[in-house]
Length: 367
Image 1 (cartoon, rainbow, N blue to C red):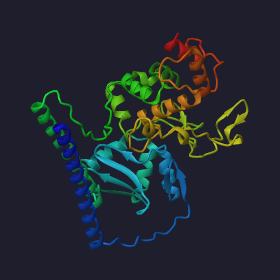
Image 2 (image 1 turned 90 degrees about the vertical axis):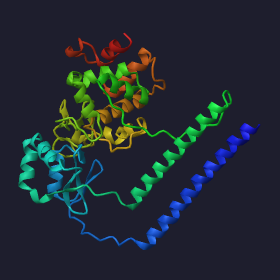
Image 3 (image 1 turned 60 degrees about the horizontal axis):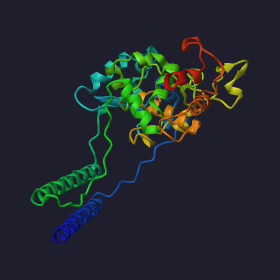
């Protein structure tokens, strides 16, 4: 009875300390807010041409051109720099994260397409290279609160260990912080496919077979390449979109074609072009947030990122297949999901051993 009372008392004390510190931070924030009133936001002229592509605001024809050349991959996040468009400055800004930032950007630029290099040389006035801004007061305050919470939970666990040592066999209540998802480092494609499949609810073997159908070269990537291209902000080179808007290793449509047009006028089959059928499809608008919804990542998804693309494809397969379970798919369930995903399970392909999409996937998974 005394042990239970002590445990409850300890929990009440820790909770009280947390509430007091939170109240104290609020008071400090109010004091700083009064000392540093927000300045009225400056009004900037509205550009004559404004478009939204993949959630990215393009205020001029020049920036539209550059974004299309980059296949709508902005912002570009690398270890030493980040390239994004600043609406306030009406420029592309390269934020350097350290002393190697500018050099890394120049090296990155060298491996881009000739069109992008040519655009950069011709429009240097549209680019600005500057150090990454330091965190503001609110960001520092939030970080301090997170560190404080971590310290208190650690302290609580240390107290529990001491109590268990002094009172063996007596259970004590535990305060467990909500886990924060860290970046999953993958070492090969199988690791990544397993992560995506189990999180979304798709058999990894099914997803692996579809990777072979859509983009078999990825199966030859080294572990280093898999890790690189699955890291948030990294992109697979020359990933699209093509004339039919298909982008990334799983060939998902993103709403615009290789010319940056939403019509997909050059995507035709049997005399029928997408431009007469409502324009480019857009899988990404429907499934692009899968890496956040199922993987619980917080970065901005990119269709040219390996992990983001696989998550979106798995979500599309799951939703269209309407299979609730993660493993143990039957032949009927597998065929239904694959057919709804590709829209075709009647044509046979030599590269698949003269099998249809459904037959090939089932042969790798359940056959």
